[in-house]
Image 1: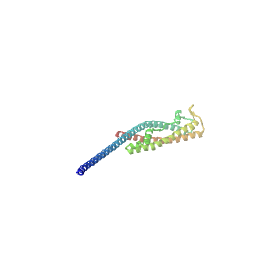
Image 2 (image 1 turned 90 degrees about the vertical axis):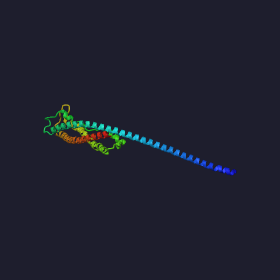
Image 3 (image 1 turned 120 degrees about the vertical axis):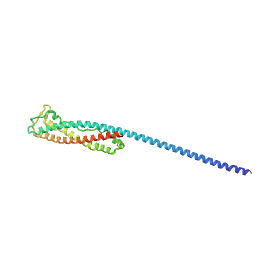
Image 4 (image 1 turned 90 degrees about the horizontal axis):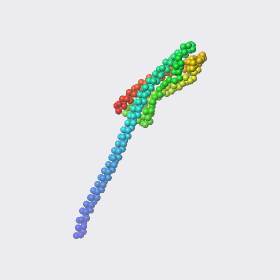
Length: 244
């Protein structure tokens, strides 16, 4: 009787206890899984939000740099106009000197002294590149959605503008050489008169002036192409910034 009562009591109790333990374990598993999922989702959302915030900040910085690039291009437009005026004035004066040196007697019909002053220096293009350099170094060009516009800007800065500046440096140096080594051998800046009858010195100056005038024609043509490309680029960048 005792054994029967014990067995009849213990078996249901054992089965009930195992079921409770199983339920407790399941609840723990679900709880841990839920907490782990919540942590994972929270971390994922935090990373996504941080990434979106960083992308937005990068796009804003790229837009600011692009706006600065536009401001520099506009400033270059105004400077190019001054360079063109200066180059045109120089070309006129240099033509007077060339025609004068081609006379059989250069002691007659001597040009005004300010004409010779124009041979010492003449303004050339020296563009601004700070915004472009910043965008290249920081990788901000990749954030500009119009890739064809980026390609045109790159061609403008790295090819057309670079070529004009490179030749402009040599052009400046040629003026400096003539102003230092050739003009003082022929022209007296204090008395404003021709101070030599040496045909070789006069011929040397004539040859240099003629060569420099041909270079001046090329520079003015290149400057015209540069200004056209610059004007188109300003319009394209303005339209892009307005659309974005």
